Length: 66
Image (cartoon, rainbow, N blue to C red; front, side, top):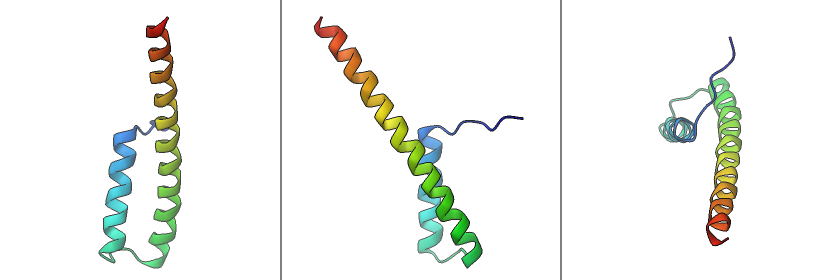
């Protein structure tokens, strides 16, 4: 079964939860490594979504000017 694509809000929520767990020292060393890798993936997803949204908005604004 294909993995469900993570949306921006879900990614941001997971990042925030992970940061809170790190700050509260709730993770052991093994979990910490896995969570940091996951946060890195989530940050890439967020960055890509923001970049794509920016392009879409620019295109819309350019079309409105024509």
